Amino acid sequence: MRWSQILKTLPEMELEKNIRLALKQVFDPEIPVNIVDLGLVYDIVTGEASEQGVPVTVVMTLTAPNCPLADEVVEDARIAVSQVPGVAEAVIRLTFDPPWDPSRMSEEALLDTGLYGMY
Image (cartoon, rainbow, N blue to C red):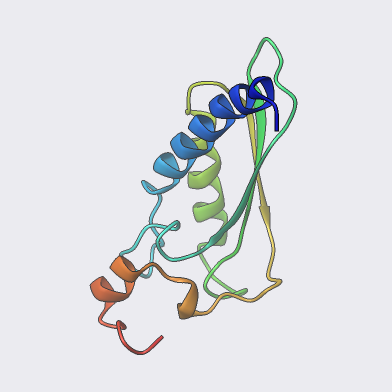
């Protein structure tokens, strides 16, 4: 990889870091853990930058497909991402493939929920 390519990816890495920090402010309404540490965020995809910023798509899931508060979680995530400096547009795409399970949770989330050692 050339230095110019490496330098170009540095702002993208910083943007993704800031997006993850913003998403850590969004909590699952039924489990008092943020959606990043729960392992609900599967991917962050950035598009081509423009004068307005970078379009961002977050691919995420829910702990259960029939979550009654799904719309609230998705909207909270969209708002959090859209407020990150440099983001022009935020889209949240839900997926249930692969299905979520507690093994996707961070060690901290497992400790907080008392599930540490079980997954």
